Image (cartoon, rainbow, N blue to C red; front, side, top):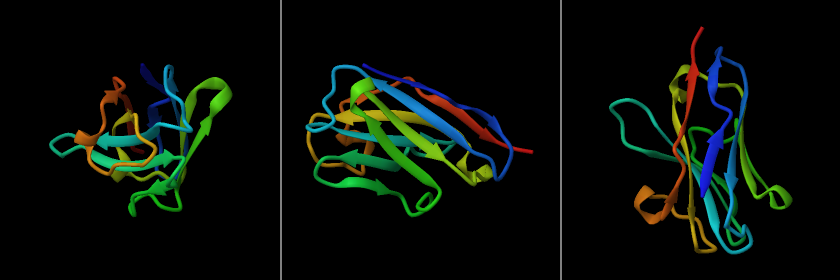
Length: 121
Protein backbone atom coordinates (compact mmCIF):
# COMPACT_ATOMS: atom_id res chain seq x y z
CA UNK A 1 0.00 0.00 0.00
CA UNK A 2 1.25 3.46 -0.94
CA UNK A 3 -0.02 6.63 0.73
CA UNK A 4 1.28 10.06 -0.26
CA UNK A 5 1.22 13.21 1.81
CA UNK A 6 2.84 16.62 1.94
CA UNK A 7 1.36 18.39 -1.04
CA UNK A 8 0.04 21.92 -0.91
CA UNK A 9 0.29 25.47 -2.21
CA UNK A 10 3.72 27.08 -2.40
CA UNK A 11 5.09 30.23 -3.98
CA UNK A 12 7.57 30.09 -6.87
CA UNK A 13 11.05 29.46 -5.54
CA UNK A 14 9.69 27.67 -2.50
CA UNK A 15 10.06 24.10 -1.28
CA UNK A 16 7.89 21.14 -0.38
CA UNK A 17 8.69 17.65 0.87
CA UNK A 18 6.40 14.83 -0.19
CA UNK A 19 6.19 11.57 1.72
CA UNK A 20 5.05 8.15 0.58
CA UNK A 21 4.33 5.53 3.22
CA UNK A 22 5.18 2.31 1.42
CA UNK A 23 4.06 -0.54 3.62
CA UNK A 24 4.73 -4.02 2.29
CA UNK A 25 7.70 -3.02 0.11
CA UNK A 26 11.38 -3.72 0.62
CA UNK A 27 13.55 -0.96 -0.79
CA UNK A 28 16.49 -3.31 -1.32
CA UNK A 29 14.32 -5.39 -3.66
CA UNK A 30 11.67 -3.02 -5.02
CA UNK A 31 11.96 0.17 -7.04
CA UNK A 32 9.96 3.18 -5.91
CA UNK A 33 9.23 6.18 -8.08
CA UNK A 34 7.48 9.51 -8.21
CA UNK A 35 5.33 10.53 -11.16
CA UNK A 36 3.28 13.66 -11.72
CA UNK A 37 0.32 14.56 -13.88
CA UNK A 38 -0.82 18.05 -14.74
CA UNK A 39 -4.31 18.74 -16.16
CA UNK A 40 -4.55 17.72 -19.79
CA UNK A 41 -1.12 16.10 -19.79
CA UNK A 42 0.15 12.55 -19.59
CA UNK A 43 1.57 11.12 -16.40
CA UNK A 44 5.26 12.04 -16.28
CA UNK A 45 8.09 10.18 -14.57
CA UNK A 46 9.91 12.43 -12.10
CA UNK A 47 12.32 10.34 -10.06
CA UNK A 48 13.09 6.80 -8.97
CA UNK A 49 15.12 4.93 -6.38
CA UNK A 50 16.26 1.33 -6.67
CA UNK A 51 19.09 -0.74 -5.26
CA UNK A 52 20.43 -1.22 -8.81
CA UNK A 53 20.06 2.33 -10.18
CA UNK A 54 20.35 4.40 -7.05
CA UNK A 55 18.59 7.77 -7.38
CA UNK A 56 17.56 8.91 -10.85
CA UNK A 57 15.80 12.08 -12.02
CA UNK A 58 14.05 13.55 -15.01
CA UNK A 59 16.04 16.35 -16.61
CA UNK A 60 13.30 18.82 -15.74
CA UNK A 61 13.84 18.33 -12.00
CA UNK A 62 17.51 17.37 -11.80
CA UNK A 63 19.34 19.57 -9.32
CA UNK A 64 16.09 20.73 -7.68
CA UNK A 65 14.44 17.51 -6.46
CA UNK A 66 15.91 14.83 -4.21
CA UNK A 67 14.49 11.35 -3.64
CA UNK A 68 15.34 9.47 -0.47
CA UNK A 69 14.19 6.41 1.44
CA UNK A 70 13.93 5.65 5.14
CA UNK A 71 13.99 1.90 5.58
CA UNK A 72 13.08 2.08 9.25
CA UNK A 73 9.92 4.05 8.46
CA UNK A 74 9.09 2.30 5.14
CA UNK A 75 8.82 5.76 3.65
CA UNK A 76 10.00 7.40 0.43
CA UNK A 77 10.48 11.15 0.28
CA UNK A 78 10.68 13.69 -2.52
CA UNK A 79 12.29 16.95 -1.47
CA UNK A 80 11.37 19.62 -4.00
CA UNK A 81 13.28 22.90 -4.02
CA UNK A 82 13.19 25.99 -6.21
CA UNK A 83 9.70 25.11 -7.38
CA UNK A 84 8.16 26.83 -10.38
CA UNK A 85 4.61 26.92 -11.74
CA UNK A 86 5.46 24.19 -14.27
CA UNK A 87 5.91 21.80 -11.34
CA UNK A 88 2.21 22.10 -10.45
CA UNK A 89 0.59 18.69 -10.75
CA UNK A 90 -0.78 15.75 -8.84
CA UNK A 91 2.21 13.77 -7.62
CA UNK A 92 1.97 10.00 -7.36
CA UNK A 93 4.14 7.46 -5.62
CA UNK A 94 4.55 4.15 -7.47
CA UNK A 95 6.35 0.88 -6.84
CA UNK A 96 7.40 -2.18 -8.78
CA UNK A 97 8.61 -5.45 -7.36
CA UNK A 98 11.86 -5.32 -9.31
CA UNK A 99 15.22 -3.95 -8.32
CA UNK A 100 15.49 -1.66 -11.35
CA UNK A 101 13.68 1.56 -12.11
CA UNK A 102 11.22 1.90 -14.95
CA UNK A 103 10.53 5.16 -16.76
CA UNK A 104 7.01 4.39 -17.95
CA UNK A 105 3.89 4.45 -15.80
CA UNK A 106 2.61 1.14 -17.14
CA UNK A 107 5.69 -0.61 -15.74
CA UNK A 108 4.49 0.01 -12.19
CA UNK A 109 2.04 -2.27 -10.44
CA UNK A 110 1.30 -0.26 -7.33
CA UNK A 111 0.14 3.34 -7.02
CA UNK A 112 -0.83 5.78 -4.33
CA UNK A 113 -3.83 8.09 -4.53
CA UNK A 114 -1.78 11.19 -5.33
CA UNK A 115 -1.18 14.52 -3.64
CA UNK A 116 -1.72 17.93 -5.22
CA UNK A 117 1.17 20.36 -5.57
CA UNK A 118 0.36 23.88 -6.69
CA UNK A 119 3.06 26.47 -7.30
CA UNK A 120 1.60 29.93 -7.60
CA UNK A 121 2.07 33.45 -6.32
